[in-house]
Image (cartoon, rainbow, N blue to C red; front, side, top):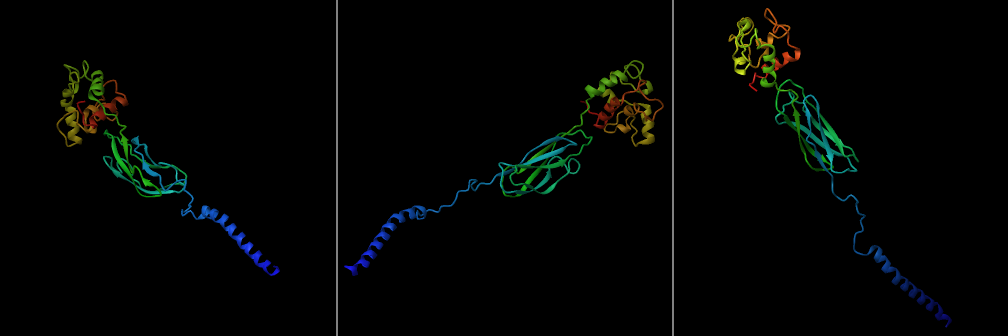
Length: 268
């Protein structure tokens, strides 16, 4: 019996080992033998934010502000290229063209691109140019073309609302250039458009023959106030013997006549 005791103890140890394995193996399978890859999930997923540019507007002479914006913040920076292009506005006459690359910093939503515009004296409709995004890194493409609008700030002068009332009150009056009177050879009647645009004056031909290649004697040279007696006679630097009217026009009133002529003297 004494010789068999070590064998019995060995068998008991084997049994205990087997029992332990039976208990442990299911736990090991639950932890690592399920057949599935246990990869930690990315709370942000695989999606990238979209990058878009705005379509701003501003009055001429001001700066156009293009906002380049992400649909949501990113933990990484977003790099992009940009460039402006003419539509009805032309660089450099109407705006300053820009191009290059820029970056939306990590954990930010947007950056702003600045485009200066030109303040001219032309009366013109609203003009447009575009800014396009390209070569976007770190984001997908949203609205990648923005259209800017440059709003004119030059007011069109109206003959009916601005010029005729001025002439009727200051020039086409009794004893001067009104109906039945033609002081200096200039008659305006009631300052109707056709009368003014066809009016001639001897002083005009003298001035034009000496200084311009125009000899039609018209007091209104459409598009050229600097050659129009109707305007020149009202200014301080008039080229004629006497400034008119006898009570001088204000600078603002002179500008009304000048601007209307320079705009082509329209019947508006």
